[in-house]
Image 1 (spheres, rainbow, N blue to C red):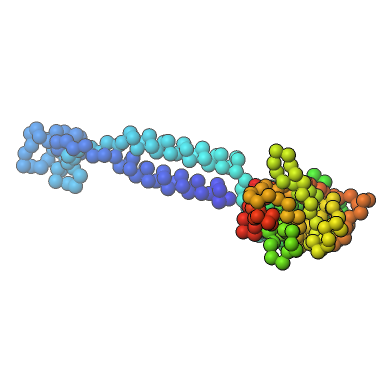
Image 2 (image 1 turned 135 degrees about the vertical axis):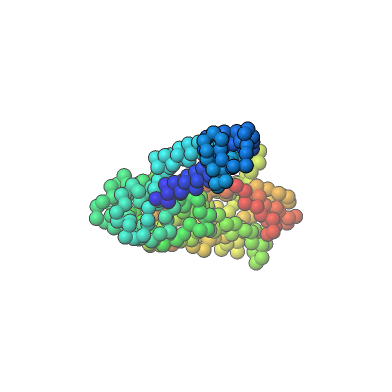
Length: 351
């Protein structure tokens, strides 16, 4: 309502201002003449103070004019132009802009499904909006297509928030959990939702040099957003590191192990296909000090998956299939000292 009302008020304010200036006009001085008949009083002027032509009393107020008020064509042109522009804007606002209606709980029940869904990106944090959508879903008033459109708008809304501010979605967790349990989310939408909510993979990295075993360096990797997608821990993603290579003319793979293996004899160290990255607290990625001194770019490849049937500490088996999965390669620029160890203060996350 405010979108339409504002240009109307603006139109009348501007019209009134322009009307005053254009209606009043600009004075043009001349010789005295009778206001009633226009007789030039320079001719046959006498002391009787009566117009020789029409007999009007020239002593009366306004009986004699000494000029004319000529309306400005410029102001008239401006007035017409402003009026046309405002009316055009008013019509366009009424046709193309969505009317933002009252979103209090009492008013939401009167809105259509489409209105609720289309405006969801600006109302993600309103509890009553989610409560209304959840109530309609439970009563069968939301179709599968509308559920998918709702998730698409949720994803669009989350994209505008910094990743550190994307969760938890307090008022949506129960609803999302219900959709997960009812298998109403497509794999493609799962992947989009996971990316926008959790990020492409671990987003925080810093090297650890203190208390490390000789000949080893470590990089700590963790997620910025540690909250669940739904209302259970099973909607937290499973993440694993699958490779670390040194970028160059020919990428060189590096050995990576959990911290426990850094205490073993090197001959006992087992080469891993993947290293789990704990979602809630992060993990240490330990690397053998084999790099030459100087700057290097490391490419860390992560696979992030969602298993709604598994808890965050349960390891997926070969028969478990993720509902969503995506791969992300994170470049890190590191500086290595003369001993081959990564310098703590010099690590840059490349985008």
